[in-house]
Length: 471
Image 1 (cartoon, rainbow, N blue to C red):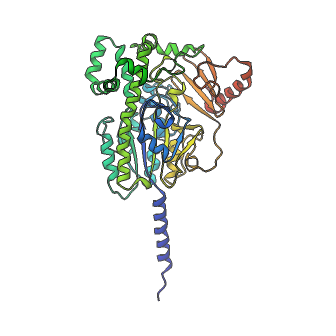
Image 2: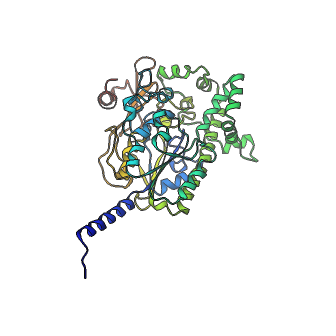
Image 3: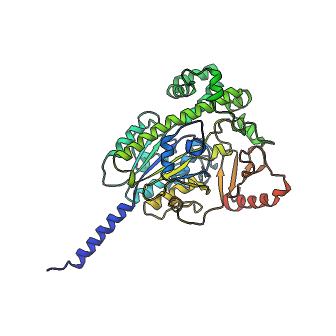
């Protein structure tokens, strides 16, 4: 009997190793909604909406209660997700640090940092096919086509979910990395924008944003057969516990609210009645339920195609919405409702189900090292970013005790013990220290409280030396 040659044995071993590597390397489905706060899932304890698809991912994997964006605005947050860096790592064409949508969209291609490694680069190196669908809102150097994605559609409201589901059902040799970028509940933005538009601008809105306004109007509808009195008594969400502005609120916030020439932010805070604020909350919940039906289409495709057990599903959002807290709508301000987003992950057989984690995680900094790890790479850009793989899989790991966040008018550091420090710079130097353990709704601040003197000094030091040195 002939024995196999050494080269034949080596080839067999390489084949077996390749098969093992392929088996351990999942498809990756990244679902990103727009403007969804962490509290906007029924699995987060919200009784005013039902999100069975989002809940399915959480219940069959892990849900984080303290997942934060790096910047609570669309484009900066999305830049961060793809690059693993703070938006402020980049400068715009005027040389200013990126802190808002305009700056993020204006990062020049010529900037050396624009050509450094990013998440799609790493996953392509690992042999993944890149697929993208839906909202982009990215600078030119991060356009999906430029990064090598197959783009399914730019329609983030209509055909996206079905096109992504069809692609999931296809059999391919390579694993896929698919980004499904769904637009809602972002259409809640148009409520105040329309309510405080003058007649000419309102005509522009109705002409250019007919689909968005139609979905908003649908979300604002009352349940059939329910009187207005019964609706507000039994159906409509109440005002939030932190409805009034924070005691001794930073002057930078009022300056920001009045900076917009359309002043819809200031108008809502000044003129909305309590019923209007409650209707805002009602519509926000309905828009979230609408987008949940699109998530269900994706999950159905995974299950029916038999790919659920070899697919890592991550669900998150680019930022939240203040939704009546502190008499604010939209985002930008670094209150919890704006900066804290859903983050859930599921890979059946690998991520234990039913986990809830209170660890501090950064969607922008941690996504790149996490997905790279699951692709079999050790990759990162900002060294403060961490792979979430051990947290996903329930393994013990020493974890960060603080986290930085950027914004257009301020920056913040949050600590694991609940201390939160915001430093505003839009109206001169202002600082606010909050204790989220005793005051989770940020109704007041303890900056001048002598009992918090040591805590204030310690978090200032973290701000200046670790998270935002030189600022």
